[in-house]
Length: 325
Image 1: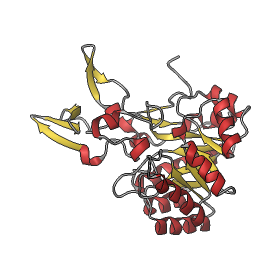
Image 2: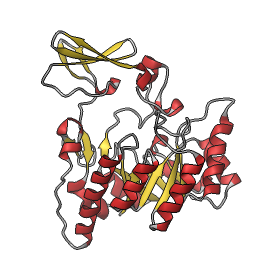
Image 3: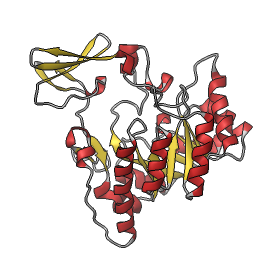
Image 4: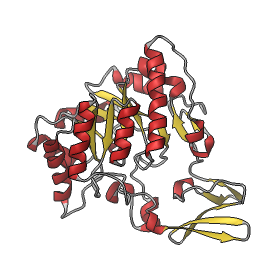
């Protein structure tokens, strides 16, 4: 299976390539990608240099242009597609059907992948994107079980890519309204969840309070590790109980089920984390490279060594095994 790895900066891209990535995905420094944070992403010249470096090491580069254009400024997204193709990326990752049509008409030879933000999770939807826009690969939402993925792979004419490690998203794969409600900015429209300009922390007695805009997201005692305040991972009081109402802090990690994913026909494994530093990228990519290499040598079981990098130092296989059913 192809190992698709994140890069939020040129340094992270180099780290991913050097650690054994088959593919690195990144975005331009604007609202066209869903990780539009200050200090992240690539200029046109940086992407050109990154593609040269990656290709020198037989590694592909995918450009994420996976947010939804706003009326009247569609040209920003169209320019991202044009420039990515001109630079020579190996695929463009898109979600919006208007952009898919633009890319297919303007660049008929470009390889197009369907972003997880399109939330295509059934046979009919995936075949539609393949038929209308010649999409070659779909990034599947994190709501499908192994059996459902296996079922799809026997019935669709495209490759499938699934998430393998990193943050979970309980909303419709990034199309979240909670962040927009609290800050006016959301992942799918502005490329940012819980923007840093709205984040602040307060010391209250022996507690640390994390806030997003006008909202208290969490209160930590002095022995707890303080997390970044995103609404879906906050602690709230509901029905006279306090706890993680939407999602507990935990990370997806499929190391234990890599052989099962391969057997289900998965083409590529996607590591989440373009906002992470190069040390994190290097450690995660190296661990997955080693696990995949062991499997290719016939060792069908492998253990994760990444628990210290997981949110809350806990991990899950998410919906793949659906242990709650």
